[in-house]
Image (tube, rainbow, N blue to C red; front, top):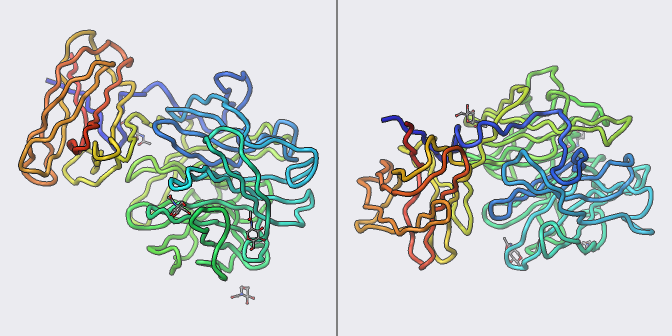
Length: 434
Ligand SMILES: *[C@@H]1O[C@H](CO)[C@@H](O)[C@H](O)[C@H]1NC(C)=O
Ligand SMILES: *[C@@H]1O[C@H](CO)[C@@H](O)[C@H](O)[C@H]1NC(C)=O
Ligand SMILES: *[C@@H]1O[C@H](CO)[C@@H](O)[C@H](O)[C@H]1NC(C)=O
Ligand SMILES: *[C@@H]1O[C@H](CO)[C@@H](O)[C@H](O)[C@H]1NC(C)=O
């Protein structure tokens, strides 16, 4: 018997979204505006199973118009949701202002989405950072003001939220170099009297990825709107020591004619490079160059693709997280299913060959000596399923679920438990092929 497997890493699903592809450098028409997506210099924030892309509206050139927000569940089809901030009559967000590189993180305790921006005059003389907060990710934000963090110039900026909940401003200080500055607990300002780290080197468009025990800082050299060979540096601590800068795309490719804007982790072992291919003479024509990164230890590389499949189909929510599991497909599984927050994993666009009652295998781990339970919902129909203890922490067992699937990819399978107990760690689903 042949099976299609939907694992958590290579992500999940060759089969699941074979037809949806990222095409770097193409026109990306939003699903509901009929126009090219205007979210340049963007960042991504994921809320539940939805990705939100928040970037600059360049419809009418470089001066500030709007900070736009688009949503997608597959990273390919983007729907315009609204503007977080729009031009005001005067002030930081007034006419002829520079408002760039919006990045949003969420503070669980305050319940606020926190947006950081590069705020400047049209001659780039102010060199400040600005902050705004929102109660919903894509709603209207309340602009709080701008300042020079720790008194230094701040041009291109990014944010990094660490796994311990602490957050950092990544900021280009033209006089001294690239800085990592700690933010206050509520994320609304920088804190301390000096930077967590300062590279005495001119690097802009900063973005940090944390993966496999390392922090990777990505950024570009300073060549204005023109592309250059972007670089990365790595460290095991944000305060360093950081490695020398090195290329991650082939030398001379100018990062496939793009500039870093964000690095999106997709699983414990994969991440997407997101860059802007700026067209300085008509900025609304700028396109999005998104490519998968290959990360092995401290080595990061990227090759060009005409098109590729991001394989976003297993989505973790409510506290479920990717855990490592050497015996699992792709070396990882969905952990913390259940618990007090009701962690869940959702597999979307699951491909089946025939319509009808089908036996699905849920490969899982259960480190207890007693069986665990989870509610498995297949196309809206829920059943309680038992998961026997597995022999060791790394060899998945199989639980079988009998459910109705639709031929094609119109199938959604959710594994969760909401009674406070923990369900199994889910490695992958296996769907029979006829
Ligand atoms: C998506 O899945 C296909 C098929 O397994 C694989 O070739 C490809 O590398 C995957 N993409 C990523 C970004 O992992
Ligand atoms: C959010 O803000 C609170 C209150 O200032 C702080 O204690 C907490 O660490 C912050 N971070 C997260 C992830 O909630
Ligand atoms: C952040 O702190 C600086 C220095 O104390 C201050 O000038 C600035 O107004 C603060 N920013 C906000 C938004 O409160
Ligand atoms: C930074 O580098 C420049 C040029 O390499 C050097 O002149 C300067 O002293 C350095 N500054 C610091 C603070 O190390």
